[in-house]
Amino acid sequence: MKEVISTVHGPKAIGPYSQAIRANGFIFISGQVAFDPATSQLVQGDIAAQTDRVMQNLKAIVEAAGSTLDKAVKTTVFLKDMNEFTAMNEVYGRYFPSNPPARATVEVARLPRDVRVEIELIALA
Image 1 (cartoon, rainbow, N blue to C red):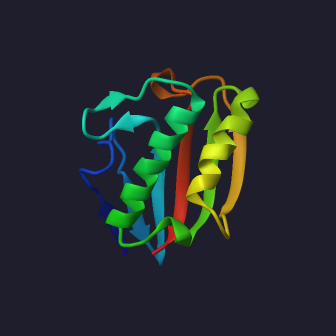
Image 2 (cartoon, helix red, strand yellow):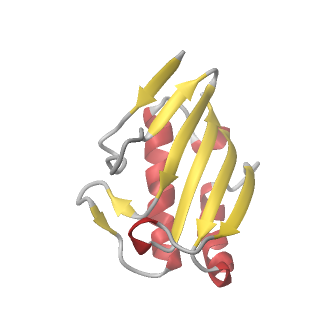
Image 3 (spheres, one colour):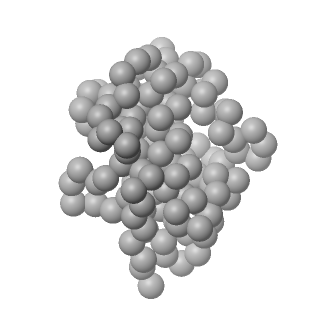
């Protein structure tokens, strides 16, 4: 069974996708970028500012699905510039102080709205 997860505490989907799906004991959260859900505007600033907003969005959505970041099992980080890995990783690590999920990080040519980072997450329900 598949359940669509949606919350006003995360950015609205800007296309034909759901914020998250709960299925078979997992929560699959769509890639999040640095949209502020309160203003529907992109957060301006460096990679640290954008990563923090992305992580706040992931946290809000996973909690709306009845789980927590502590139950995250896998993330994928898409970076516009791998030279910003260290700064992104510092902020990312604050959200996973112990037992972090498995992760892949890749550099991509372009991201939606020309943001610097996008992160998707899978967690236990």
